Image (cartoon, rainbow, N blue to C red; front, top):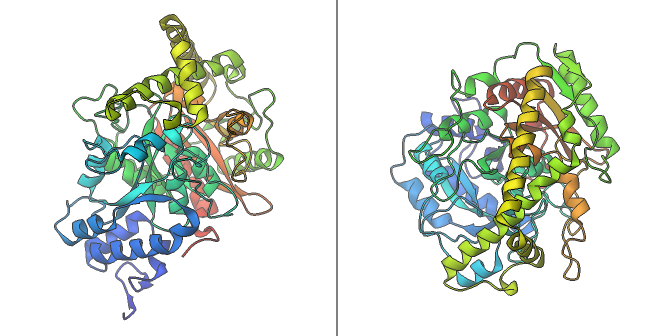
Length: 492
């Protein structure tokens, strides 16, 4: 195929790996002006997945022929017309497609969804073309993507290491250059953790920013968005999907202007608290991670922000932090009851991993009073976090994870002791899960590397509804660091 110079300044040929360097905004622009067709882009994406995924194990349910057929016909004239998308095989259902959530029992039953999730409908309206579904730990319960049902996903920065979880398949696919962005969800850090460990941008939006219906509730801890390389993708995809559906239980306040515009606008000087330490007894912070937080603080200070050595005191309240666990166990038990309804039979320990079964048993032992008390603790935590932000700072700067990416197997339990490596999991979720309970937006940015070259993500947390500040500061830092130029070794 003849190489050509396009009207957007990229010299390339479709069906080469050069398309892998472009973000979703740029690819959509090329399609819009006629320099690239949806069919060419989907064919190129499929070729990359087929070449790379045998090393990574990110895409567990390919939908290549369906994607080619969609790309060849009239697509919705949305802002991302013809751009490929992968869907995480957890909460976002696609009618008629496999829907296993990393669960062996659902896989063996060949379970398929009977409805489209609202986020899938939003992607379709935006013009995205789904090319498959990605690997996830069972029920999204781990900070590593190593489900017994589908096997481990490898990190493109080091194939002996994991990509984090629970959106590990999504992050690994994007970091490996299979496509520019992929759907991800975050109920305790599951967007931000894999973004941090795979060198990507990962925004957890505010509660109620993106619809979770029809089968999930916006009032819960989980939210939907994407992992990607660039701030403009992060913002523009949010613009395309952050709108309410009629049944939404929580609707975050709309920004005054589209999110995309904030990326290119420097924020006013902000007051930013700095947390460069762990908040849990017995879970230390890696020195390289602590150094990266301080380097991030220096970057921000050099751009006119007031950095203060202060963090919410409530983050040191071990009892309030632990209250999340009781509600999580109760939700696991309830979810297994839902699966029983899908399968038409009671689940047994053979249907799920040992840790999942034990968590469900713990949830079943909780009384209604226990769960109500835990919910009250979460409410108090949310209010105290909001009080700190209102009185002390505009943003909080913190590590996303307390250590770099682990070796595969480090974060998984054993048959004999399913919770043997809980301390490893906590090293990744300790500073992400609190902001799921509060519903605040938080973003992980790929600001640093270890001496051995592994990514380190730095997290910024804003007040509820203030994604605009995160996008402004993220854009400011992206202009300083240009992280999208630095790609994983396993890359087209």
